[in-house]
Image (cartoon, rainbow, N blue to C red; front, side, top):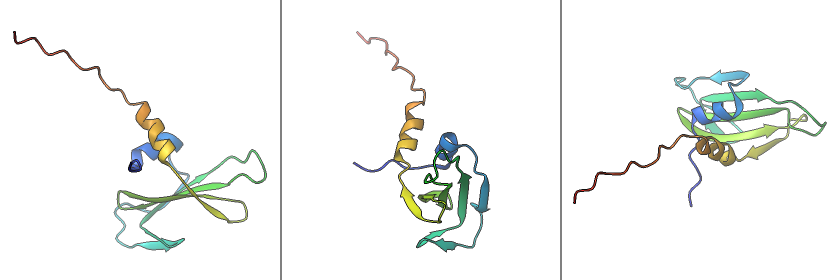
Amino acid sequence: MTAPRIVRNEVVQCFGTPNVTIGSVNEPRELEEHGLRFNEKWIYRLPRPTADAPVERHVYWLRYDFVQSYLVGAGGVVTPEDLSACSAAVASRRYVPPPTALPSTR
């Protein structure tokens, strides 16, 4: 089974608009961080219910393609984040119309 494709609109539906955006989908220059090539980085500042909770979420994009998401701790330690649950939650909220009955041809 393949992992769900992460798209920009779904990330915004899960987390809202980012607090900070570095670069742009149209930015021709690519940057590198944590061994990842990207041209746009979204930064979300997170509430800290505990002292060891992550302080930020960084989401990396290369044009329209999702690259990776990391949670960043207070000491700067980064941990890869799996956004497949976010994507699945958004997909489960989509309206799927019931199938329409075709008229009988008999």
